[in-house]
Image (cartoon, rainbow, N blue to C red; front, side, top):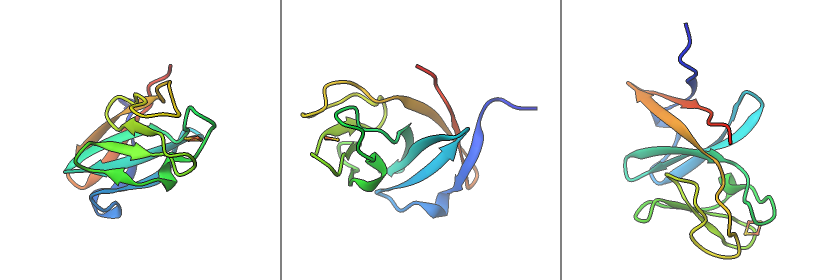
Length: 108
Ligand code: FES
């Protein structure tokens, strides 16, 4: 039985605020923990492919910043909220069940 969610981490694995790179069906996804909420985005900055999982999480704004040139993305929607990125990255679904954090890919 599968609802498409794949367990990728334990709630203890990621600080708040913090993030972790996970792999879901060969796709690199950054799991984000911010102010008690969980989010998952493609680990790809839409400016020039920077690894979002290596950038800082802002818990108050629920954003993650690209380590290369500083573009920020909305952790919930994947929207680019600051330059130099202008396009959203893909946001995936996250479910927390007990201490298990699961992700379901959303294809764009
Ligand atoms: S590659 Fe991410 S801001 Fe340039």
